[in-house]
Length: 85
Figure 1 (cartoon, one colour):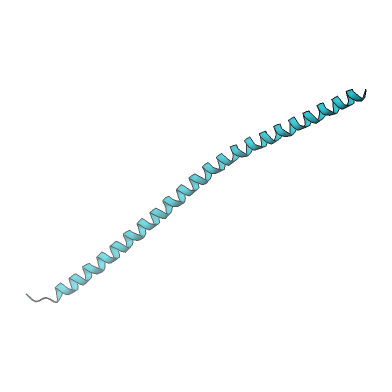
Figure 2: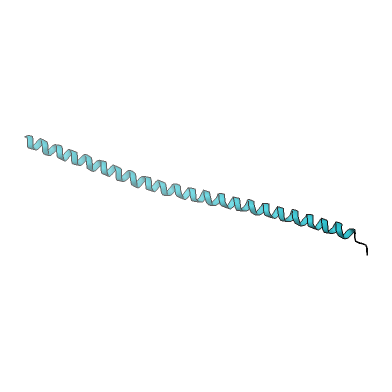
C-alpha cells in the first residue's frame, strides 16, 4: 500500500512537472510570436518616421536653396542696375 501511494505521488509530481514545462513552452512560443508582430509594427513605424524626416529635410534644403538663389539674383540685379554703359 505504501509503495502504491509513493508511486502515485511520483506520477502526480511527474505530471505536474510536465504540465509546468508545457505551459512554459507555450508561453515562450506565444511571447515570441507577439514579439515578432510588435517588431513588424515598430519597423514600419520607424520607416515612416525616417521617411517623414527625410522629406522634411529635403523641403528645408529646397527652401534654403531658393532663398539663397533669389537673394543672389537680387544682388546681381542691383549690381547690374548701377552699371553705366
